[in-house]
Length: 229
Image (cartoon, helix red, strand yellow):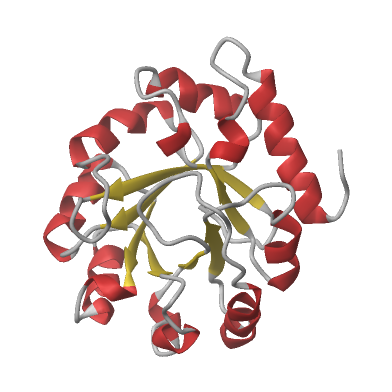
């Protein structure tokens, strides 16, 4: 998994057909998805339940790009090895999820994965200032985590501050929540390079009409790049 700052579209399968995950993953990758984003929720840290390690392990054979696993759970540390075994390429924990995020990031890397840290909308960027050398990705939440399809919260000033703070370090800035062709250029201009999109990718399409996914992905990418398709 090499590093570059080109725009990457990471569809969130939280918006996919739950009865057809394998084909949905294959469809979005065939239609241009760069990463596959998996939202893990525990009903405790966030008010929703989604996938556990066994489900993520079942997704793995279908993912040929990058499996980007976003843990919205607390605690995180007891489950790091399980998600490594499930095949996560990137494992992201919330800075708010426990008292020892530094140790968590070390453990994620020690398990052979790229380490991500996520910031809720109300958490200041300074919370990750001393973690940059342990981090491969910082996820800026532009909704309050827990549910798909929420309205975008403008975090562009936070993204700009984070981009300045990162400097030339090989750290991705990922945006999660409310990304669509309207909001994508705002976050890309501010410095983001990984755009998680759920509803905006999957709306109107299916495994029988995957070309809709492709059109949606191209529109988000073109908007983020400043050129509409």
